[in-house]
Length: 384
Image (cartoon, rainbow, N blue to C red; front, side, top):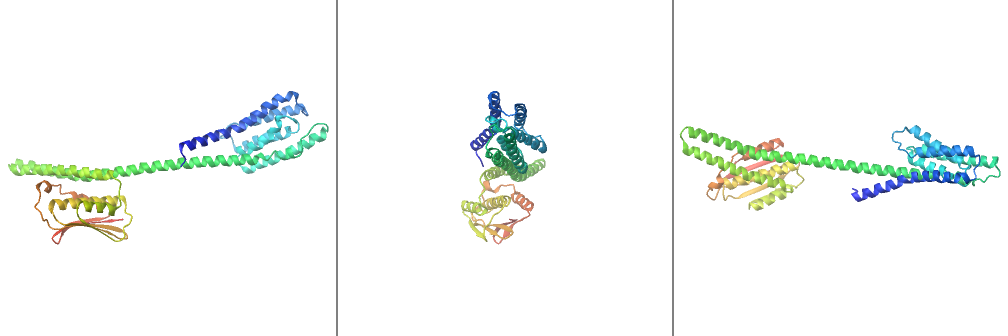
């Protein structure tokens, strides 16, 4: 992609090129007008009329042509070339000789049709040769141009066409760059919307289930208090507080995870296992996994490991990630508790795996959790 400095230089070069044609036309008109009174000119009234007409055509050729029909553009350039070619042999020794050359160049630059531009240039050369020969025959003593001069009046059309093609290439490159920039901005906006949706779903999962658990416990506490069971009501309130504290921790962990760059699934789970001193095994050939699947797998592993720490403290834990052709399976297993339950960890919403099961269903997968042997196993299977 071009830098701002490169684009500025490109625009500067384009403006410089755009000034060449006006400079040539105005120079030819001004210098010819200054030379006209003292110059040797054949058939002065006719030459003066041609000079006025070619000057008008030259000035018209400098105007913006965006709204002019193509056939009118061709007519103007044809008249410009015709008047310049006819004036060439009449105003010998003046700057009027520039007009047919400038007209040929302008035809290549201005006209979209190469065929029309070349036709005008060739016709101008033929007319210039014929006019030069005619003036030489009718006025033997009048100085005339060598034959190669009128023959070459059409050659600048090649320069004009080349300049036209270069301008087209620059415009196309600018349009392509602008289109690519718009596409990048659109992709960035789309990615931002996707990320916002992912964050919203995650926060909804964490807070929605936790708040439901809190409301349930508070309703229970209210009912127990009304029935005179104050101790049980207080226990329900403490349970609601534990759910709130757990919810805050889960929300902070979710936001922290969302802010971090996403690592490959196997690397992320390996770091999680190392942090929890758990065994980690990968089966099959690891491959690319979508961001939604990766995030759901990681959240399920975190939930399963948290539950193991709460309800089976000291138990051996293991994670197994199995890759298949069309799906990926995560299995988290913990053995029996080897340490007493800790009161500060035993509380929880009890709905974390429910949320994970709902998330898995949304992605077209399944989550199973239950006793296995002397421990507990959580198995999540999602499409890749």
